[in-house]
Image (cartoon, rainbow over all chains, first blue to last red):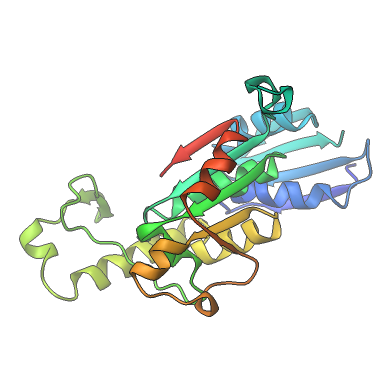
Amino acid sequence: MADKVLDAKGLNCPLPILKAKKALKDVPDGGTLEVLSTDPGSVADFQAFCRTTGNELVEHSEEGGVYSFLIRKA
Amino acid sequence: MSEETGANAIDPNTMSIIVTKGSLDWAYPPFILGTTAAAMGLEVTMFFTFYGLPLLLKKMDLKVTPLGNAAMKMPMMGGHMVMPNIVAAIPGVDAMASKMMKNLIKKNGVASIEDLRDLAVEADVRMIGCQMTMDLFDYQADEMIDGIEVGGAATYIEVATKSHINLFI
């Protein structure tokens, strides 16, 4: 279970990233944030976001058009 | 040349954007890239000049025009519609197209420019209004949102010399 869950379903680029960045502020270092999104572009974007910011994309998956990303805060 | 001003001294996590267009469609790229870069830890400066300057006004009234825009294909009745210039020139068509675009934006979960600008302010994006444009088009400082700076070409060039990524939109 993630420390915090962000529901970004229905939002389009760049809102899932911007809201995830904000939500990460409430997550302790080493803690996790789970992001739910319906934007197919967020798959590539969360990978790029994590590579650039140093946060770890622990896993991502898709089920029924909903993408789920588990991010560990650096 | 001192080490501090050498090319190697430029922080890769810095970006500047010159914002020159202020229509509803063209307002998106600079604000999307500016806010996203800030979210990814970059230090971002946006310089608003000419038709980009009104994007700093407290009260924005953004419009889009299909006139002369051959690439603007609005989704309609299962297809895409390009508006002939002779139709686009009719009074009221711009207002209709702007309303259609705003509906599409809402329907697709795309942020409004007002929201993106608020997010940029919140993310400490440095925003500079062009003094010459303010003089030219008669805009006053008190019409602009709080927290912005006013400067000229030299102010921007100084930023550009210290930014790894410099965009002109």
